[in-house]
Each structure stands twice: as C-alpha cells, then as structure tokens.
Amino acid sequence: MIITRTPFRISFVGGGTDIPEFYEQNKGAVLSSSINKYMYISSHPFFDKDKIRLKYSQTETVSTIGEIEHELLKRIFTEMNVGNGIELSSIADIVSGTGMGSSSSFTVGVLHNLAAQKGKVIDKADLAHTAYKIERSLYSSIGKQDQYAASFGGLNVFEFSKNGDVTRTPVLLNSDFKKELNKKLVLFYVGNRKSTKSILKSYEYEKKRTVLRQMTDLVYDLKYALEKESFDDFGAILHEGWLLKKTISNQISTQEIDTIYETALKNGAKGGKLLGAGASGFMLFYCEEKYQNNLIRSLEPTCRRFDFSFEEDGSQVIFQDTLT
Image 1 (cartoon, rainbow, N blue to C red):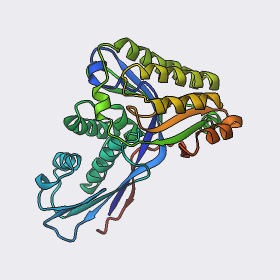
Image 2 (image 1 turned 30 degrees about the vertical axis):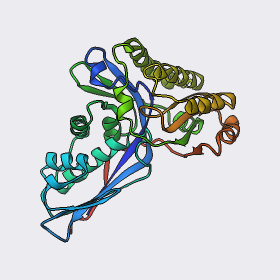
Image 3 (image 1 turned 60 degrees about the horizontal axis):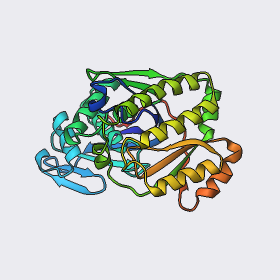
C-alpha cells in the first residue's frame, strides 16, 4: 500500500493571472501558501487482478481504463499507463468546490501516488506541470497556480511567463512572525459549494487586463510587506486585492458574500477575500486577535470558523508498504 498526502492552499493575491489568456501577453504572479488540510490518496493491489477499483464519492469497478467514468481519473490513469489489478481511494479534509484548489490537490496526489507505485521519484515541478496539463485538457478555463502550490507546499510567489514557464520564489519569513501572521488570519466556511468552471469562463480578460496587471503588482507589494513584517500593510493589500478581483466578473461575488465581507470589516477585520474563483466556499480575513471574538460572533451561525495552519512540505508519500 502507498499513501500520499497533498495539501490544499490559500491564495492571498494574484488569482486570475495564472490563466494563459492573460500570462501569454502579460506576466502573471500569485502569492499563496499551502495549509495543513490535505487530500489523501491510497493505492494497493486489488484482489481481482483483471480489474481496477476506484473509490472517491462513488465506487467504480472496471475492466479497462476506457470504462472509467471519472474523467479526471481516466486521464491520469492513461497518462501514467496504469494496468489492471489496482485499487485507489481518496479521502479529503475539505469538500470540493470551496476555493482551496481541491481538484489540483487530487490530481497531484493521484499522480504522485501512481508514480510511487511504479517506483519513480517524481520532481515537484514535473509533478505540477503534468497535473496542469491533464486538468487543462479537461477544463479549458483552469489556471496553473493550484498544481504548483499543492506540489511544492510552503509560502511562495509563483510567476507565470509568456512561454508558460513557472518560477517559484519561496517567501522566507522569521518563524515567530509567520506564527503571528497565522494567528491573525481567520478562515470561515460560507457554504454554497458549486463548480467554478463557469465563473472562470466569465472572466473578461481583454476588458479587465489592466485590473489583472494591478493584481500582479500587488503580489510584489504583498511579498515586500511580508518581508518587512508589516501586518498593517498585509491587511490593506488583502483588501485592495479583493476589491480589484470583484471587478473581473460579476459572478465572483454575491450580495450574500458582500454582506459577510462588510460585516467582517465592521467587526475588526482589516481585509479579506473569498478564496477560489468566486461565489462560494471559504472566506479569509486578516483580523487582530483582540477583535477576533467580535468577528466570529458577528458571522456565526451563518459562517463556520475553520482552523488551519501553514504547512511547508507539499505533496508527500507518507506511507509505503513494500511487502504488498
């Protein structure tokens, strides 16, 4: 048996600039961090050596890869040239469709697991690139930040060049400052799970190209704020980034989301954003600890607080039984 653990991520600023429609003409950039919530993939020999069994939200038992109904798994199994006689299962700390990059964590985790089954050590950049290539073949509107965040882990700036290359720059912080930053970030689940593919398709890249360039600039502003350990600047930039992002598409926010955000600002938050493409999932706020009880009370019971910590490891093989 092999078990891989692949983190989810929170993106602070720059989302939307990781789409080819933008970065092929203007360099894109995202600042994000992986967190200690994970996608777990396990695989082991299946009792019936002539079949493949897959367990996710459903269970499939098939005789050939072509019969797999889960399109993403079908593409991954084809890419990895997987034979019969394998059982693969997934378990996640966070449900899909909530803005944490779950689809990419799933893709990276499965690829990593199947590579380990074949005895291969896969480079993190190659793992992320392959995951993006597979997802892009299914979802033409998807970006490429999530695969790299899931593969590498940690707090990073990812830059997307016109030729499609991705450059990773770790944001190196004093450990005490990073712990304090983590304490000042409050995450809420606001519900309303939904597919973000239609939202991504609604992004008006030509009309909003100037806004996306501003969001790219904010990535470097935020990196500088972190490196000089400025909490106030962090909150302000997070706020500015959210206001900019909302102008990309009228589907990113909703009246409910706007109300939650305004309530948070009135109760101590200095900035925040909705994670992911928009309209659903999790909202992240920067809030000094002395105001956090007010913030939490103001948003409950509509929103549920969700504790998290930064993580550094990225996708890992956490168990491997060589006897199977």
